[in-house]
Amino acid sequence: MTFRATCLTLFPEAFPGILGVSIVGTALRQGVWSLDTVDVREHGVGKHRNVDDTPSGGGAGMVMRADVAAAALDSVEQAGRPRIYLSPRGKPLRQARVRELAAGPGVILLCGRFEGLDERVIEARELEEISIGDFVLAGGEAAAQALLEACVRLLPGVAGNADSLAEESFETGLLEHPHYTRPQIWEDREIPTVLTSGDHAKIRAWRRNQAEELTKARRPDLYAASRDAPLPRAKPRD
Ligand code: SAH
Image (tube, rainbow, N blue to C red):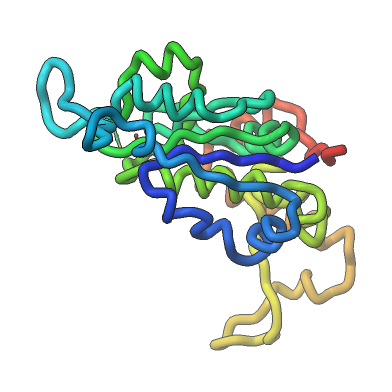
């Protein structure tokens, strides 16, 4: 089963962008997943293919028209895929949702521009609003690529080592422990001796402790949640 991504955008030339390189790009060329774009402008109205208009009630900027966005969405075969509008007002994207999306048939992503999108099309087409963080981008394309990159690296065969996926940040409910590699001493800094001891139980305990301390210091919210909830396990996709 191929994971199918369709991105609706005013800038199709922004794709595949980052999705064309490294393991995610290789997987695209191998057909592990597919990517197509819909140019929202082609669904614009009138001679000038207008896609936006001034905000009702006044104020700065322009708003993407509901009829135009709906026409672009309706031109795409849904095939069981969730329709997502990338938006700073959306639910913050978490690894758990990434895992669910990666286990499904794919996604349809609407990339906003300007001030945003007419609310009525969000309701009428039951778009799921997802944010990639508490900051404002100029458009949804970079957010769509971030979401897709997170999904595609979880597809079977894309990342070389399934163990590395299971152990990393968020998958265990904690941030990941620090990493080191040769040289043994660099600018007078030595790799923690436990890591070169060969004692695997000790190494595991050290890493677990580092992960806990780091999470406590940087993300008290995650740390508190990891105390309350049983550890989520990464589920392999069939
Ligand atoms: N006026 C809007 C911001 C519009 S930014 C507001 O204050 O909520 C223009 C477009 O960029 C949005 O329509 C959305 O598609 C995209 N975008 C901006 N920030 C984003 C974020 N943090 N996550 C996902 N998409 C974002």
